[in-house]
Amino acid sequence: MAALPLATADVWDANSQAIMNGELRALPPIFRIYGRRKIFAGPVTTVKVFEENVLVRELLQEKGHGRVLVIDGGGSVHCALLGGNLAQLAHINGWVGIVVNGCIRDVDEINGCDIGVRALNSHPKKPGKKSAGEKRVPVTIEGTRICDGEWLYADADGILISRTELTV
Image: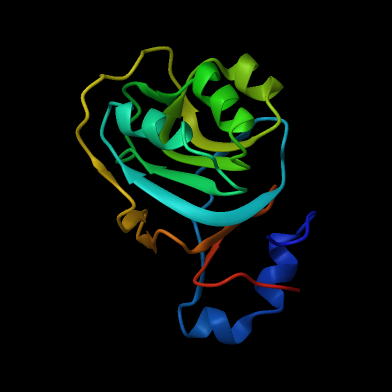
């Protein structure tokens, strides 16, 4: 895993060739910062769901081994896909971060967890509990494609996605 703290601006500045050939991409600045871990990096595991989170729970029950879960919730702001219980489960199981293309709830609980969370916003409504969706598939967030096994780097400046682990 990459050494922390890691500045995304430094990673961006040091990797112009990777940017030009598409190996390094930045997510648009649409995410709010939650959780106690403000800087995190790790290999990505993806899940694609819409207004339900059964598959999210299934993945977070696995040992994280320093991974980052990227949840493509289709950008829905009609319910939360992650709450305090799941954030705590993620922390206990060794996940370092979660990026939600959707909403979270239990903000105060999540802010007390030693995990990094990025989400569009918060919403008090619970998600549905069907098992629909797909795990470990390529997802696209605001035009940026993210594949299972790529690397994610996050800090206060933003979120970067790389095909490989990077050093500065």
